Image 1 (cartoon, each protein chain N blue to C red):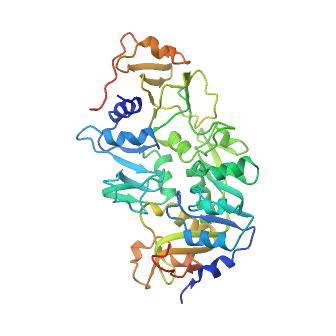
Image 2 (cartoon, helix red, strand yellow; image 1 turned 30 degrees about the horizontal axis):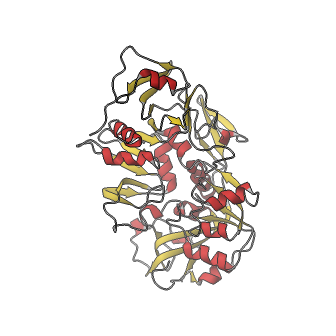
Image 3 (cartoon, rainbow over the protein chains, first blue to last red; image 1 turned 180 degrees about the vertical axis):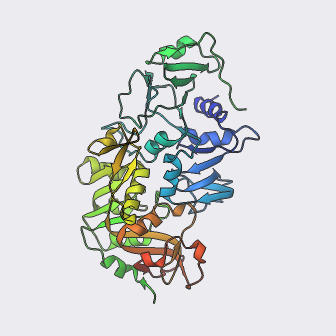
Length: 218
Length: 221
């Protein structure tokens, strides 16, 4: 299975019926396709909608209905729309259950850097800082390394997105949970050894005696 | 009494060097006709307050392409490489602001508030130069109001008094900016007779809208 698809299928299992969820652009958007049967969640688009769904089919685009990346989407029956203040009130006010975002770096304290590489990439933070600061559970979906270089570090070298730690990090190698004691290796991807994860990670990992295999949504 | 004026008359009210709030999110819900006319009339030295700068050739991106903007306050410019190029080249000053904070700063101006306290950005580069205020043990940043000479907004329907409603994700920053601009100019996809928009569906009341751009050809875009 493709690395990104594996990550998306694993994170899909974290979403529970009734959750209000915001998916970041890119890899996190894939998760909507892998929800287990019977799990019904509400997806928020921070540009002003609860109840987004993937575009039902090409040809059904509406010029006034897009996600925060500007891609055309659909809206489920029961969806509702609102302005940007309300949308970020939902986010900052703790009304969102889960957000899934990409990451550039995560460190031993669970702190995230995901919005800029000074001098190279200065896109602006968009909604990322609000999402990480305000959402109940922040899940990071990212490829474990960047061109072989670890992205899970002792300390982030890039500017932080928030001083609030993230809740869970899911990569194509492992599931890692930031805790008060440090980063705990919770699950290993199929065919991946503990040694391989440790070699690809700069941060210290707390390794329980038994590390189960990663489950993924069918 | 109706507020509809021509597109060119609307833009002639805006001098070079003005500060403009412009609604829209990646161009969805942006006032495309007003933006096009700003470019056509060659406005320069503008300050733009907006969520983003769209893409090259689309939405606020058209103003960036025309080098009409010298200062920008936005949350995201990643979709427009020309904005980044002008920023790095020093041709345009850019202030990046978290999206929720940007929305609240605009709202604060429109609602007569001296600022808003937000936890977003505490301990990050956003906090540099900002005042930190501790409330019941929790640290917040003081986000100051942003004012503008004009708000250019896009509605779905307007009536001839200037009551506005919006469609789906095209609402975004528009109703907030309609509270904040000193002069508010709205364009709508259609203009309907007064009374056609039921009171409960009016999102921006006519009292906030100073000028409405008259119907164009076709669907108004």
